[in-house]
Structures are given as C-alpha cells and as structure tokens.
Image (cartoon, rainbow, N blue to C red; front, side, top):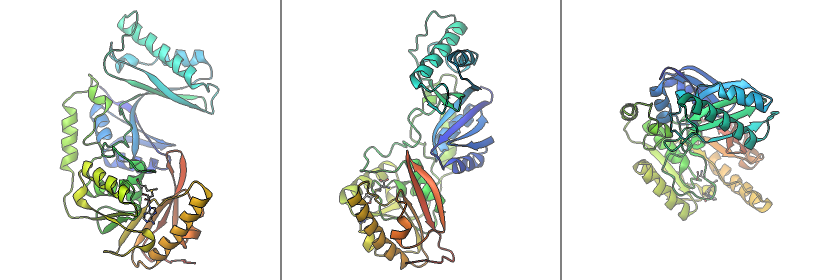
Amino acid sequence: MNTMKLCATCLFGLEGLTSSQLKRLGFRDVSAENGRVTFSGDETALAKALVNLRFAERVMINIGSFDAVSFTELFDRTYELPWERFIPVDGAFPVTGSCVSSVLHSVPDCQKIIKKAAARRIMEKYRLSWAEEKAELYQIRFTVIRDRVELYIDASGQALHKRGYRAVGTAAPLRETLAAAMADLSGYRGKGVFWDPFCGSGTIAIEAALIALNRAPGLNRAFDAMNWRWVNRKIWPQVRQEASAAEFTGGYEILASDIDEGALEIARSNASKAGVSKLIEFFRADAGELELRRGPGRIVANPPYGERMMERREAALLMRRFGKRCSAMDGWSFCVLTADADFESSFGSKADKKRKLYNGMIKCDLYMYPDKERQWKWK
Ligand SMILES: C[S@@+](CC[C@H](N)C(=O)[O-])C[C@H]1O[C@@H](n2cnc3c(N)ncnc32)[C@H](O)[C@@H]1O
C-alpha cells in the first residue's frame, strides 16, 4: 500500500501531546486540529502508530473529505471514493458516525446514505449483485462538522485507551489516555518520586510506570488492522519488537495510595495485569493526613469531586486538609485534575498554570504547581 492519509483522534486538549509523539516517532505531515491529528504513512506507519500512541483514542485511514449539504451530494461524493482499495470483496463495512452543526444533522440518515454509496461502489468494482460482508471488519466512521464530511476506515478496533489491563474499574476511573497525559504533563520521565494519593483503580500510577519504562501502550493488545489481509502480517511482530527494544529498565519510585481498601485491591490487580506491579508501592492512606515516606517528588492526582451538594461540601473539606498537607511538602510539585471550579480556593493556593482537559464529556482543569521557585500563595 502506498502512502495513506492517517488520522489519530484524541480527547480535546491532548492534540499537542499526540502530535509531539507522532513527530518523535518520525512521522511526516503531522498537523493538529480539534480532537484529531493528521499525518501520513504506509502500513508500517499505521501499525507503529497503533502500538505506540499513548494519548490517542483511535487511528484511522482518511478515505476522503468533502463539503455536502444534501443527501445527493453525500451519496455521489461517497460513491466516488476508492473504497475497493481498502475493503476486499467479502470484507464487512458497517458505518457509524456523528453530525455537528450541519445541514445534514441526522446521524441514521447519513449512516444509511454512506453505507448505500460505499456498497454500490464495492459491488460495481467487484461485479457483485450484493455485498456479502462475511469476512474481516473494516469499520467505516464519518464526521459531518459544519457541513464538512470526513470519511475514515478505523484501524483500531476497541478504542486505544483500552490497554487491556483494566478489566475491573472503581466508581470513577479516569481514561487511561488522560491519566498518561497527566503523568506526562507533570514532567515525569521516571526520575524522582511519583505519588498518586487518590489512586482509585490505579490508572495514573500505572500509566506513570508505563511512561517510566517507555513501554508502548498497545504492545499486548489486538487491533482490527491485524486482520486486514492487505497489511503484511510480518509487520506486527517487527513493530512490537522495535517497541520492546526501546524499553528502559531501572528502579522507579512510584507510590499509589487511597483511603479505600477495595479500590487498592483493584489497583493492585490492574497493575499486575499491566505488568508493572513491581514498580508501584500501594498502601492505604488518608490524603488529608499524608505522611511523607520519601521525597521530594511530584504528586499527580484526581481527587473525588461530588455531584451533589453534600458530596461537594465534603470534597471541598477534604481538599482543604489535603492542601494544608501539601503546603508543608517542601520541594514537591503538584498536578491535580478536577471538575471543581473552586478547587484553588479549597486547596488554598492559586495554580501557576491551568490546563483545560476533558475526561470523556466532563470538562476538567489540570491545576499545576511546579516545584521550582514556587511562590506559594496559601490562604
Ligand atoms: C475520582 S477517584 C480516582 C480515580 C482514579 N484516578 C482511577 O482512575 O481509578 C477518587 C478516589 O479518591 C479516594 N478517596 C476519597 N477520599 C479519600 C481520602 N480522604 N484519602 C485518600 N483517598 C480518598 C476514593 O476512594 C477514590 O478512589
């Protein structure tokens, strides 16, 4: 296969991290937009992106883009695209997608038209009277945003945040991609102490351990593109071997604590599935009474934030106690992700930097308190 137009989608706010990683991996034509980063490459590039990307949700092939404000336009322009280049005679190609701020606003209608047009094209090119679709999956995805249609074939299968280690979660687990972003944005590269004192199912500490090891997040999972017959099967072990060879070894100091024994049990089991349990020290502790075990280092956390009034009041009190402890931790840095707009006032200090991130559809801020020459503004 020649060079393809590829696209990595990601949570809003993670475009910069995704595009930096793509550039580090040696990709060309990397360009970030809202919630996605485009780049180009061949089948090996596709496999490399799937196995290595830490902050992306999906990797897809862009089949075409055009403007459309009528179903006739949508059908005709979809039909013109070279679907047979990617979808074999018996390949299955269901269609799914979304419409935002567009004349064509009905997702089921767009879905039907795109399916009809792609099916007609495939049947004509393969001289079929109907498309059998009994072989491997080529999931078609579309977006219609402000009348611009983008058509893709998804190479990922399950979303890339599903690394495979979190079979069981706790009440409010973070997406793995967002947890990895928090660890990365805190500046953690494996040096010094890393501590999540509200660890829940352990996602942040596990992602920090994967970063410390430079372990590719997709090393042990499957992707739809692995079943595509036009992708050379030898590429996958090669790409995985290359990723494994880039791993580091060494001693790391990653701490993860929580007040809930049940959560800790799940976190331990997840860390073991991720193959990083030896790197993380799990223990029970109240974050409002933190006792320093070592340090200095960095605290990266996603504390509880109540939906209801009572829970919010409780969460604010906890942040007050947590903030007091943090104020006594000389030389430490803090990164806290929360949807609580009053966090700084409860925590007792204004952040040096704030970064808007989305946990799924929930808008959060990452409050960052770097350690160097920090001017604490405690109330
Ligand atoms: C939003 S969840 C963290 C989710 C976690 N990032 C994950 O991916 O699973 C908040 C966690 O804080 C814990 N927690 C609540 N109060 C606490 C306290 N006083 N000290 C330590 N942990 C506490 C809860 O048990 C819960 O696991």
